Image 1 (cartoon, rainbow, N blue to C red):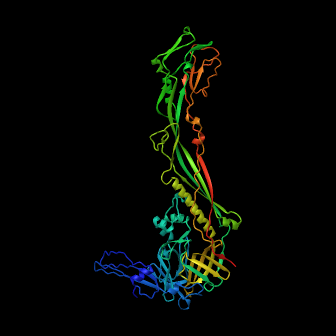
Image 2: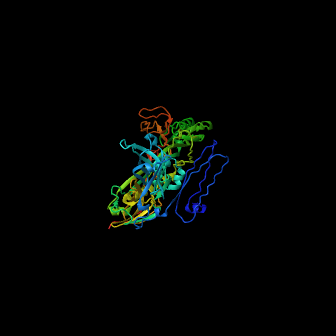
Image 3: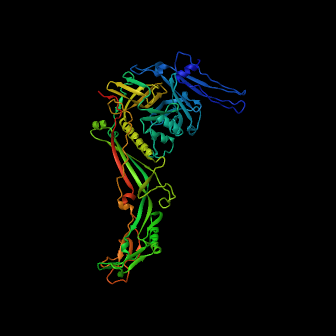
Length: 637
């Protein structure tokens, strides 16, 4: 048989390539190569280039299996399809480098399920004494062929997991698996992203232990399953786009083998509430002014209308500078601006005989009747934005007569831990204020910004929609066929039985062969959901707006408390250090009994930061979204 390059291209078979180096004369390199093509009338050739740079020995074992097209045909009411004469089959099993097919006993089974490793079991009688433990990890390949070995088709490739010895018969049974976890762990994230699609976010799934966990986390956001094929190649099985399509009618399946399990209420979900807590730090700054102005005539003596007022002691510039420098938790911006009293001379009474009061220019510079200084304070405030989107499948709720709910939650936190921020103005980020009022900067670094929070919420919503469909399609239609190894996981099958009409995707296959009789059966499981036969696609989500902080600080939040309190007056109150904040002075002259006098001092009280400004801020919003989920063809007359 010749195998032509054009036929290879048409059949989707790539030409082999590679290089091997022989380091010692006489070394032999074996290159096993298996090519399986469907039978065709056109000649098929396989160009193979071997370059020899030294006269060393090379062997190239080349196995080409041509499968009869009839072995992949049938169904659709064909009433079976050709196999070997009499329908007898043969199991071919390679263990390590040995063909042990002739020593097989009992039943050989190969089981494949979506989202699970492919497994196989067989038993054989060894030709000589062996150590069973040496079988662990040995390579295994299983093919089913027509009696005599024609039309062999590989159904399993993997390793021995558990060998067992029957001490009575000497048979060794091998339980094997296809190394799905190991292979998918070593599959790159780039391949997974491209093959699976969907969404993944660390806030939703957490950091995966390996790429196998990453695959399972990512595939939860899209309607698909994973598996390895019979040659251990990773496959993604889309629920929206099945592979080959088959129709199974009464003549095709074994009698009385069709069964159905419908989804249960316990498994079905009609709504899923997705809540994302997005937490970040709002770095805040506030500018406020310490302003004070007194009346000059409170300090100038006067005698008018019988009221003889000696005047109070002046505020000094030194007192102003000391007090404005001593403010805690607020950082002064620039020097204090002091308003000095004017220099001059004032007549005390109505006539010149009452005397005069004078302030010289030099003295005026040491006194103050007012001042102004601008301050800034900084503080962090934790903000948590909680957005809840409830994904509802209203048609299913109508069928069930009420909701069956589930909740999913995730959190994304942008941690701010720069020591010294708020007390050391050189520590970034800078929050600049240009006057009285508030300014803020949200600490949202890359990966923890608004876009990332939106992506995390969309990931949750994709997973919720997929979860609704997953719960719906937990029903199963099962049936048995004479061996049909062309069926694959992910294929779409329509079953038209006498008491059932259903469509679903293959999620389970079990091929079993009795090595004594050559009889072989394929058992099939289809995933089916609620009836309806309506398509639907993953929605494009509209996210709720981020909730806003409606609190507005009162005006007193931006100014210092500084009053004027003059002691020594008739009927004046007692001094209260908690309430008399500001400039405290007394009328000049001797202390008179029965009057209250105050300490000569200047104090200021900075604005309080209200609880609404400082305490953790929790804001929330909610949204309900109605969705459609695909339903299946499922009719039970």
